[in-house]
Image 1 (spheres, rainbow, N blue to C red):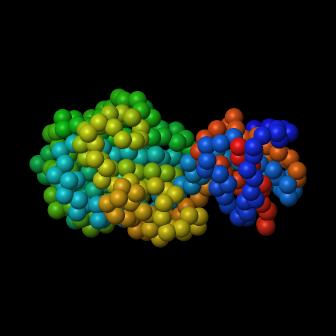
Image 2: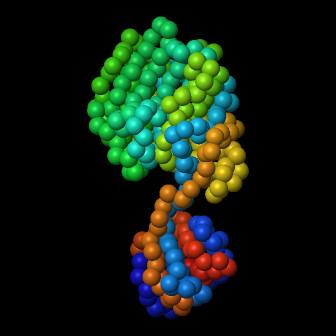
Image 3: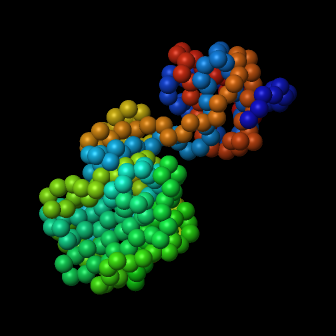
Length: 314
């Protein structure tokens, strides 16, 4: 982004009020865009961010989770012999097992499916029943503080792990029946994002940031997110979708249309994961954001109170 002189063309301009110490979406259109920082004090903090949203759920590796118990009543999920779990996460440095997603009956210690990160930052996954189980861990560790699209796929024969769209080599520590998926579990009563509920208690709390979790039935490939193959979307929980954005959330909406909304527990909260690009400008400076943000949403953050920007689109 750079300052420039506004060219002569058919521009449509409007003022957008900003919220102090928060991200404000100033544009979501696919036009050429420019911002006039006409009442900004350039000595203060002004930032731009181009992307779908600057929010993520923050898990403290202590007692935070998202309870999605309603999803275990989905008939298609309970009968599924194939499916996938997608999660967009940024882990912290906690040296213990951290669960990203799990399904369980809540009481038994041997009736659950989970996707997690181990104490040395390797993605791991398990399906455990009294009769059959498989457990594996990725050969390569995740780097704390880096965003990853993690995808566990089971196409009815064996589980496969993808990281950012590439198949990840894994090492199995147990495998009595690699074909088992959700249909092998019984009496499911608990769904969790950020913990595992077994033996009547929650354990393995997640630590880090989470933007998205998607749950599917049916076959899939390694594409990080989005519709593909013969998948059916069962649940979709996004960090920017719920009862509030910023501060402490109460619920997270299930965007699949199935109404399996999640209830937040512990001190789970929203935070801005994106620092944005600092603008060392002053009032009256135009910023051409077309090259760095040609399409999609444009956000502005400032630490100043009662400020606004003039957005021009053309």
